[in-house]
Image (cartoon, rainbow over all chains, first blue to last red; front, side, top):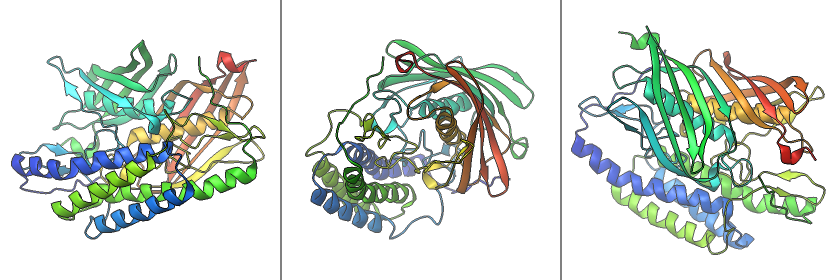
Length: 208
Length: 208
C-alpha cells in the first residue's frame, strides 16, 4: 500500500517561487556530476573540491525532509514529482525529461544524455534507455487522476543509441479495464534505436 | 561501430591510486545529490550553495576529458567502466553496484537505493529497476573477453520495491551461438519484486 505525501495549499505562485529557488541548484549539481566523471585535475585539487562538496552538503542538510521527496501536490491537485529520477526538477540524476502531450494523447520528450548516461563508449547505457522508456510509456498510460504503474515492459534494442540529443515518445495502443497497453520508442538523430511495449496497471488503491 | 578508448599501461598499482583519488569525490557528490532533493533550507542558503557548487565544477573542469569517460583498460586487459551509471566508481548517479560472480557464474549485488531513485512514494522507480536489471543480466551474459549487449529484455513487476537495501541477481539460462539468454530478479527484504529475462548478443565487432 502506497501513501501519498500531501502538502496542502501550494498555489501556482508558490510552485513558481519554489521552482525558481531549486531548479538552478539542481542544474548546477547536474553539471558537477558531469565534471566529476570527466575531470583530470590533480589529486590535491580533487581533494579540495571534495571538501567543498561536503561543506555544501552539510549546509543543505541543515534542514531537510526525513526521507525521500515523495509525491507532493499543488492546491489545485497537480502533481509535483520533483524528486523523480527521470523528470524531477529537484533530482540532479534526471536528464530531466520535459514531457509534452499532444491532442491525440501521444506523449514525447526531446532531451540530452551526456557522460553520466554512458554504457558502450559514446553510447547510451541500455538500462538508461529502459529507465526513460519505462517512464514515458507510464506517462502515456496514466493521467493525473488515473495513475498506472508498470506491470510488464519489453524493450527491443535495434542498435546502440548515440549520446547527445535524443527523442522518446509513447502512446496508448488500447485499454482493457484497469490495464493500458502502451507502445513507444527512443530515437537518436539517425532514427529509432529502441522499441518498447508494456502493460500498465491502475493499482488497487487508485481505483476509488 | 563502437570504438573502445584504450588507455595503455595502467598497472594495478595505478588503478588503486586512481581509485583512492576519485572514489571519495564521487561519494561526496552522491551525498550532495541526496541533499539537493531533500533540503528545506531557505532560498538564500540554496543560492549560496549553488555558487559553491558552480565553483567546484569550474575547478574540476580546469582539465577534463573532451567527451564521456569511455571504456578504459588496465595493462592486464581488465575493464575500468568507471563512468558507468550502474557500476561506475566515478559516476555519482550509480548506486553503485559492486557485482560479484560465484563459482556457478551467477552474478549478484546488494546495494542501497535512496531518495534519488524514487518513483511511487517510498518505492523504487520502475525504470530504475529496469536500469539495474539490464546491467546485471548483461553482466551475467558477458565476460571481459566476450561482451554481449542487450538485444531484448522483458521485465515483470510483481509489486513495488521498497527504497532501502535491495538485491539483484542474474545468470545465463542458455547460450545459442552469439546469443545468451539471461534471467534474473530484483528483491527487497520481503522477497522478489521484479523478474527479468533477456537476450544478449555479442556485437559483430567483438566476434573477432
